Each structure stands twice: as C-alpha cells, then as structure tokens.
Image (cartoon, rainbow, N blue to C red; front, side, top):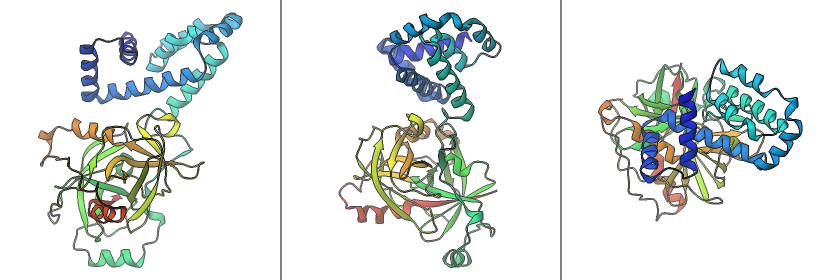
Length: 364
C-alpha cells in the first residue's frame, strides 16, 4: 500500500514539475526500462484528466459540505483496505476533495473501466472493435487458391484462423504487428504482395501497448533493400493528411484520411484517432503521414461511429523496440533513419512501400 502511494506521489511530482532536473531525468529513464511503471504513469494521467472533467475542486467541496454527513466514507474505505490496489489508493487520496454525487459516479466508473480493461490499450469495451480478420468465415478466392498451389513455402495447407497486417522494421526480416493479431497463435506466417509465405517467430510482445515484434526465420526469405520509411517520434498535428496500407482482403488496400484526435478510444493517450475507413485485416498496418513517416500502427475502430479508427503512436513502438535486448536476438534490429519517400507523390510512395507490407496469418 505504501509503495503505491509513493509511486503516485512521484507521478504527480513529475507531471506538476515539482521534481528537480536530475529527479525528472531519472524518472524518465525508469519509464524507458520499466514498462509496468510506464503503463501506470499513463493510466494515472488519464485518471487525473477524468477528475478534471468533473469540475473544479472548490466547487465540489461546497457540495461535499452540504451532504457529507450522509456518506459513511470510512466504512466504504475499509472495504478496500483488505485488498489494496492502485484504484483504492486513488480513492483514498482524492475522496476528501470530491462531492458525494461526483465521487460515487467517478468511483463506479473507474471500477467499470478497470474491470473491463478500459485503461488497458489492448482491451476495450463493446464500442471498440479490433481489426484482425476471421479467416474461418471467409471463403478462399480463386486467386488465393492459385497462390497456395504455386507457393514453394512450407505454409500449412489448412486455412489460417485469423489474419492481419504487419510491416517491416528492419530489412533483415523483423516486422511489427498488433499483439491481438498473434495472441494465442500456435504458428504465424507472413505473406508478401507476390503471394510468397514465410514462417515467423515472435521475439517480443507488449500487450499493454498492443505491439508484437516478429522475425522471419524462413531460409527462403532474402533480405530486403533498405526500408524506405522512417518512424516519427514526435506527435503529429490534428487535421494532418494520413494514409494506411493493409490487408483487409487478399490484396493490399490503400486508405486515406486525416488525423482527427490526438488521443484514441476513451481518451487513450497512447493512440491517435483517425478518420479512415478500415476493416478487419487492417490491424497492424502502418499509419503514414504525407512525407512517408510511420506515425502509428492501426489497431481498431469505434463500432458506433463511422470512420473513427485508432492507431497506436509510433513513439510507443520505438519504446518497445528499444526495450528489446539485442543480445537475445539472432540478428540485430536496425531501424532505418533515412526517409526516401519524402520527395515522392502518393502513388510513388505506395509502390515503394508494398514490398515491406505483409499479410500476417495466424494458425491455432
């Protein structure tokens, strides 16, 4: 319980700029090396934003003074002393500053959000739809059958259960997709735009950020030329033109739109909201800006809003890549730092990118 309180104090000191420069630097380094800490920092920031939306603290204190005697706060708090969690710590810390009505509303909302995974980027409510494609319910097209007959790969003959999209991180066969695409897979293959399939292994997963890094280990795979795009670390601007390339069907599909919000579903700060038509199979595809920078990874859409899709920000992908121990890999991940797409028109950009975008096929 005490350690959780100390953690909250550190997070609040960091965001309110009460730390010294040395303390802030050390805290940022801790976040880079400790993904659990980073997740808690993000979740707590979202919590503080939720509190702010209910109004100023002073106004809530007035309401509290009027009906405080009607609420047995101590007995309510005692219930959570048995199983102290981050949620209960937040309740104890902020209960004195909240009016009864607002407190109950916030508290019950937070219980719902935690229990349904709303604060977890890989689990969402019923209004959020992941974009992996259920292949068991899709009849293979004649083109797909011909590709399988002519393929020299060792891909299983049975149809894959799910599919999504992945794209290359490093020319030696490392690529990224969403964690929810490959979750619980017995085996995973990727297929390029020529119909060639390759066996891959999972080298890293981050369920919180919905990121999975794969490596093509098939001996028939030949290293690609230098990756033409780079990965943007800074935030992109509202209204910016964006596009995506993915596999909602057996052939690669291009979609264009714009960045409509700097936060994702339910205010998720690790994602963007984008106005682009996306469909099952788009999960794991790159979200590109007009200059050919990867700014995110398409992950899901809102079921009750047309054109509202979401993408995990590329900064969190880079954090994931940087947290992988290079000593644990058979080959080094070398992320390209030179963008060769910037001076090209959209059609030329897409042509250069297609060799680096793969369909991800999951077998269970």
